[in-house]
Length: 364
Image 1 (cartoon, one colour):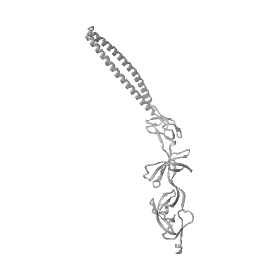
Image 2 (cartoon, rainbow, N blue to C red):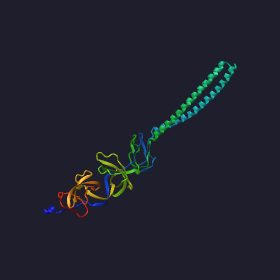
Image 3 (cartoon, rainbow, N blue to C red):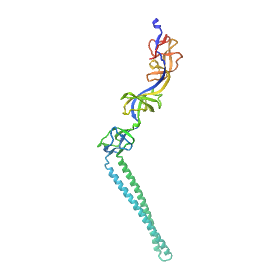
């Protein structure tokens, strides 16, 4: 009986300084800008000028399709444009000729009208002169209309040539940005359809880490927070970075939030899709009393029951908690009386009112 009533020596939580609060997540190495380079038309692949691991500049030719019937179509469109340009000159000459004839007919009509007024020529001759002038004026209108038609035909020929040249240009695959070729999907001689991937390109400047963080731990994550990362192929190296994007949509099945991390000192060689681990520092506590979550009963994310030692006796108290560390300890925020200590273990020997004292040394 005396043995059962002797004071228990129990480990208790002790204040710690400069405690980092970190959130852990796992994920992969990804890139913000990644492209499946493909042709807009289908044909036989004539050549592929880039390969796995090559660096290409914006505007570089990556691959070409067999021009097929498109090259003759461009030549035909150019010939049609040349004809249209010749017709423009011809129509201008016809307009000038019609205007000269009109001027001549107008002057002749004026003289005959004057002579008819003095009865030198007949009225019929004067009327014929007026008729010839009217016909010449109509010829000018016709010539001007034909000139307008020639201008329209020229614009149409230019548009048709531009269209055919664009269709021919679609048979040349151009790099859309400075990129690294990470995969080659097709070889010369393959028949490809519009949209079939020829090469996979990635912008090396846009590499970042995608971390999946439990929604229950992600609430305090904010942009700009520092991050430490380790990749599967280099487990002994730590890379630094910061949070640059927080996904607005969580994974419904796994109840995880997507956190994107930009590296400050990324490895020289990066492999897309490689597994990585991330530690996001959400806060640093100047001084904190930390209790293992296993020592808290009925924890609801904010409050829970703990065993305490108060004036030499064991008591039961509801405590309000703050931050949670990555090793599963909770920061005591409120509800602990002055001089009380929080017991960091649980066991069958603990009961309210029993004599107890704090064990020497740090809490486990």
